[in-house]
Length: 223
Ligand code: SAH
Image 1 (cartoon, protein in one colour):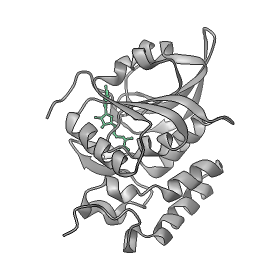
Image 2 (cartoon, rainbow, N blue to C red):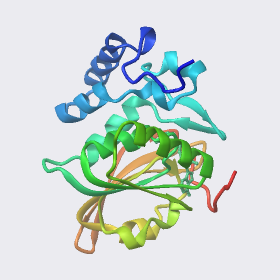
Image 3 (tube, rainbow, N blue to C red):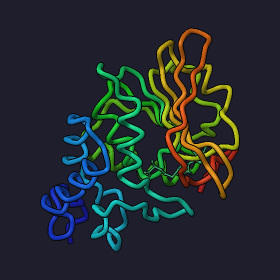
């Protein structure tokens, strides 16, 4: 058996199935053509277990083990579109690498990506997949991302894939002037996806929508 995943996909992971997903993202209001093209060409099925790969191009979140989920494609697109301005992003921080799918999308649209994940096996798995895709502009850290990654900042964009109860001060401080933080805030019953822009020492907050993400937890998990 071939142990290397098929990047092109067959059957339910084929090009035609992927086109349908892109159509759906457009219907739901995603407009950035560069982003849509990256989502068209990024194989989501390789980030999933074989038993779930046939569902990779459905617009749903799916389990990736350790009680975590791969984000829904529309959510990845929405959050990415929010931070993509007219210019290409220079430095991006991602909190919650998970399986690495969002990382792959943002890495194709930025100069450097710094990604932090608290569950070590998820981070290792993501690293393998992202290397397989030939993405070399990513730096990885096994840590509690609530603290950000101060040494690598400031960042033009910070994307959080897990929800803390309040906006972590460290993340606000690590935004560059003109930078944007997109983060779900709240407990498991109710969360709001916020987009927070920095202008000098002023922060402007916009509510994007109600959402449901996994909680942002403190500390690290080694196994
Ligand atoms: N974008 C990812 C989302 C994974 S789910 C994907 O599509 O696969 C959210 C991830 O955030 C989980 O892997 C979880 O372990 C991670 N996470 C939760 N709290 C965290 C924290 N404090 N620091 C870093 N990662 C965290």
